[in-house]
Image (cartoon, rainbow, N blue to C red; front, side, top):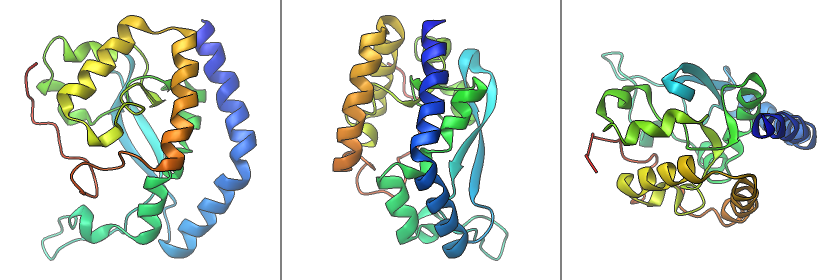
Length: 198
């Protein structure tokens, strides 16, 4: 109950403080990329319940002659790269926190298609709400291996405290300012999880 109350207060304060940035980014995206401004994607949350993740759109909507989306590297723009590297694309997730889909701190929500690939131990990451930031994000972000990410996620699930959350939030600001660990091996997006066992 304390964590949920803290999430609600933190999300409201975050929306108020960052509202000028939110509006400015929305206008820039509309001018550069057009409509829609937001990107919605189904992700598994607490107890693997599916919810709609809200982010700012960072890529062009473009398809090949067969109707398949072009690779991320071809749809990415300078604006999109900046939004991702600065984590500004994740500001709308504060709305997910208010709705109760997410927490400010917790394991990052991954793709729905990964659910059948998890080991029983890896699936324990869904015993808590997913977060805007998390232990894996302050210990390497996308530059670390999947094995390391899951290990950090499970450590958080088993050892979460109010003070650990505060430490993660404080460290997150430094990571974002330095733009560390944005991608793995210079990819536009992190490589997909293939179902490796621990």
